[in-house]
Image 1: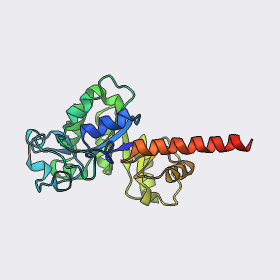
Image 2: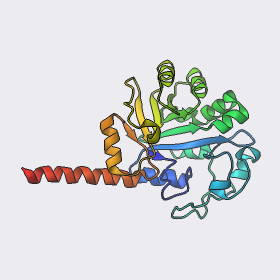
Image 3: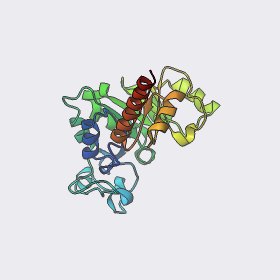
Image 4: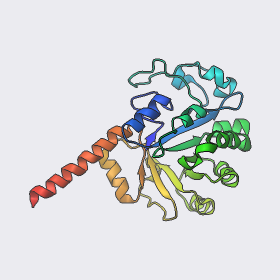
Amino acid sequence: MAHRGHAARYPENSLAAIEAAAAAGVHLIEFDIQLSKDGTPVLMHDETLARTAGRDDRVFDLTAAELQTIELQADGADSADGVHIPTLSQAVALLAGHPEWTYFIEIKRHSLEQFGVDAVVDAVLAEIAACSQQCVIISFDHRCLEAVQQRADVRTGWVLKAMSKATRMQAEALRPEYLLINYHRLLDNVPWPGDWQWVCYEIIEAAHAQSLQAQGIDIISSMAAPELQAAMLEAVLMETASRETKR
């Protein structure tokens, strides 16, 4: 899965990052959503634009039209020239003609706190109505996911802050299609069995990804997903060649 698109090479949560990941053959694409001042879902991880655009503005204080004029900074990426903050509507438009793509759309807590769960969920669901089967709504906030499940036939994914008896009970009650966890929080815990798939982020090395798969993780998420995918394939080919040589 491409975490915030191909964020190792392009500005995170940009259309360029999404398209680059898909072009490289990574068709599971995660990105983040905040709401603008006028209630439009836009692709942005943080509450402010300081880290990604070098501005102190909060996303909530600018309209969608104003946000779309702001260029994203490269932050180590190849180029950010002319790369602007996109709306969810623009990202959804890229799905046309690509039934193999799946979006994992993370609704951020900042917007939930600013506008309320109902307003944010309604705004996001309205934008993805025509392509909901290609989307998964994910969040750290289980109340947000409950609201999604009550309103629409859309897959959900709960991003875990910790693995505990309490969170396992909540997961079993929520019954999302996916459980997502940072590898730092997974540690030596065994993924809970259930009618869900496990996603682990933020992975960089092929050996680490392979060990997580052996541990029971179904989907590996990375900001450098295309490079990681290629490295994992190379590792498999080398292992296969080694076995053939020993024969």
